[in-house]
Image (cartoon, rainbow, N blue to C red):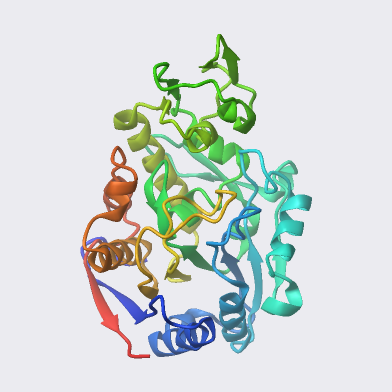
Length: 363
């Protein structure tokens, strides 16, 4: 892992909205080969590829054709490889391993197609949970899926996009939230207590239906949130079309990002010089791939980036997307969220550098 004061190399190959997927796949091959970052994989290494398989109805996730390229190049190094993600707090098809795996298959992540096993760990089984003592400001012992801890190498494959809780999500979020068990996710969300703006609420019950903890009820045609039951997953905020549910973003929005980064630190605790991150700045959407719908673009396609530094690759992705859009699209989409909190805290914890050298590759 690079020292916080060094400049990290970030390789970038452009892909725009007019680029056909077949061509984009070929560009990914060029990017991985010319960067040389996969050369850190040794023969016999067990390589975990962490990605998001997309929620039912979502189309923003990184396509399986790209994962095939990554897995092929890992196997070219005589290493073992598998794709994996963890289960979620919110209600949907990804709350348990059986349904989550079926959803992954339905989105094309079939072992024969991606040239790798596809695994969804069941964190209700203690042997599939790893406790990592990190003794940080918020998290003393992080709970992550053991499948990532036991791997020799981790490759983080992230769809760079907006996020309702963290402003944007990329390599760091893919690690911190994405590798955490449900208990670890709950620890990150525990300070997020939404409240209802009664004047905006129309009593449509969308929040009540979305809440996985049954913490929302409708009384007198207004939503009421039971903070004692709330798990802070923000499903109600995402479901509300009337801007009637909010949180104290100054506290909650800061703390959740810092807890997420502390979990990312736990994931990388035993992966020194054995991590690679690939960000896809394609179909950049306002919300996470957990959104069960075809979320429209908020910025033009930019391209694909690769680095061994999760902080640098996220900062480079952020800069490239906003430069292409001519504005801060993430701040526009989520004006109360400051995504730089996660980057600054990750730098503070030694996860990487905000200073990077962007190496442009021609298609």
